[in-house]
Length: 271
Image (cartoon, rainbow, N blue to C red; front, side):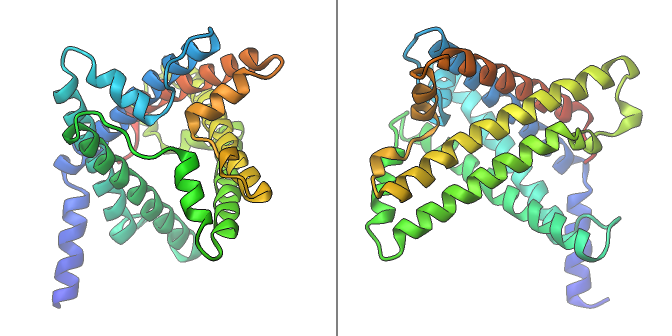
């Protein structure tokens, strides 16, 4: 066996290990907790409150609980564990597939793994800097558009985010998310309602991402960084529209549904 073969086999063994599986499931549960808190914060906005409904607001809300520090540490470890499993999947996973399908799924795992690695990093950074926040979406967009080609890059990024949002929503409508579950492990009485809740959650998550992406596209089109909005500002903009609180309420249902689906995946996903 060559050195390359030995390294690949080691990566497969780690990928298939019980320890990595536990970490991956912890990451899915961590995702569920974030979306659960985010849903409640967005619900506060829908009722006229002033909660910060974005990642920073979620982390602050969790940090303010009785076990805030340890809870954020577990959250960061969970995201890191899920990122590790995804990156290993990108390297040596999806072995039951071949050709273009395997390449596509490995690239998808790579992209998701990098996102969750960034989430883990930002969670630990938030914990270590004692809750102080970073720049706003407007300031980051303004900085990006100040560089040559920055306006185009922001516009393309916005379109990509919109596209991802549409893809996620369509996945929910087609109930493709159910394919991730280990059928034999899901109780028969739970399967159908869980898939329905997951569909609602995917649609809600897709709409949320699409909304943020649309504001990025608007910022690039008008060359006005103030049009770029993070999740919190985007939700507040929705709430300020006619019937906005009704729409925001529907988005809250989607967020909470995605949280529930994340907990279902944490228990029954094929890993």
